[in-house]
Image 1 (cartoon, one colour):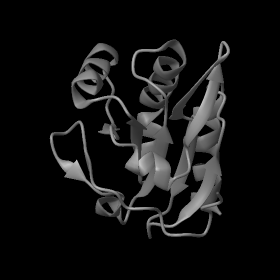
Image 2: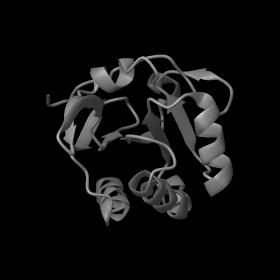
Image 3: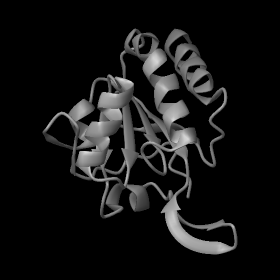
Length: 156
C-alpha cells in the first residue's frame, strides 16, 4: 500500500490531551505520524524518547509528532508520565487508523502468528498529503532520518 501523494486517511481517535482528534485537525502543520507496537516495550520506549529529545527541532519545522498504538488511553497516560513525552498519543484500540495506513499486519514472533502494528512512520504535509513513508522501521537512527527529511523538504 503506497500512500505517497494521497490525502492522509482521516479517522477520529481519542488522544492523550483528553480530546478526540482527526488528522485533518492539524492542517497547516506538518505531521510526523508514527505507528508503534506497544507502550513500555524497549524498542517503543527508545523510539518515543528519541522523538521526545528531538521534539523542539520538529516544532521548529512547523511539525507535530503524533504516536499511534492499539494501547488504551490509560496505558498511554502511564507511558507519557513515565517518559515525559511532550506529544500526542492516539489510542487506536479498534485498529481503524492502523488499517487505513496499511500497518496492521500478520506478524510472526518465536513461531507464533498474531496481528499487530508494523512499526511505520508517515510525513503528512501542511495540506494533509502523505509525502513520505517508512515501513518496517528500525528504531536506531530513524528519528534523525525523519527530521532530516523534513529539514530538506522545508528548506528546498
